[in-house]
Image (cartoon, rainbow, N blue to C red; front, top):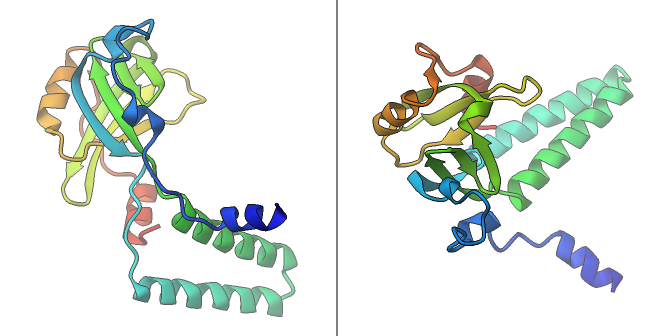
Length: 190
């Protein structure tokens, strides 16, 4: 039994689709069926996972080895452990847990991401950053300050149609740009 458990830990997941993608006809069962009757509906990844070439992995490996050597030479064991843990977790998540694909519904009541429903009353504002092919995202700022902005990949959706629909229900923030952190993560393909 222990052998089977260890083999299953290193098996790549069969499907990266969130279970909500497969839900059918929830209009009868769901207490708020209007979340399912969408003006816009698509399946989007939880986040973008940039493809990485062999060159990227070689450079990342060299940076990792350089950091480990420097940390060992200066006897910074805590940072060394943190660097090794970060690299191991990143590689594990990249290979074994690709972003799940989740169904997105924008309806007359609000936005539904998989099973999570966010009514318009809980959304403070929105903005769209659309600069294909690099960035195609809808941002929702919720009123609860403990929750970060919701970021939804637009995939092949028409950003202008979504913007026109949402501006009748929410305040649009204009002039927003991709954050420095998002830009850095995208450029480094992290």
